[in-house]
Length: 144
Image (cartoon, rainbow, N blue to C red; front, side, top):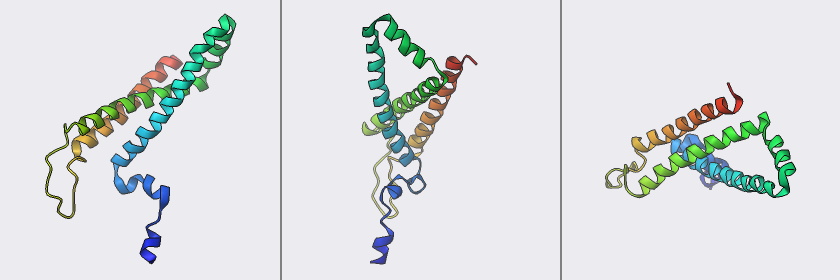
């Protein structure tokens, strides 16, 4: 009975990246970046529709978006977009069987062939490419 009680970690245990490795980090970043891009998509539709209020409405919204705070939001959106794209390509290739490895007999301790070094390198590459895109975006937006 006591061991069952200790195994109930809830969301904290599920989100713990230390237990499951970089694959769990990629899983959560994929979900969070997807939600962030959805919020940005909705905000972008609202921003673009402000042209219907005429030149004054458009200029008011452009003045609001041309701030350092909004530039930081755009830099985060750039990072989310690049990570979500590269990691999505990795997931699609994995679902298609590319880079997964050969199936093996599931003897204890089972090492899943799909979580091999190629996929881990791709996850790290997605994070690095997102960071590089964010750095480039910050130099463009802030004119450094």
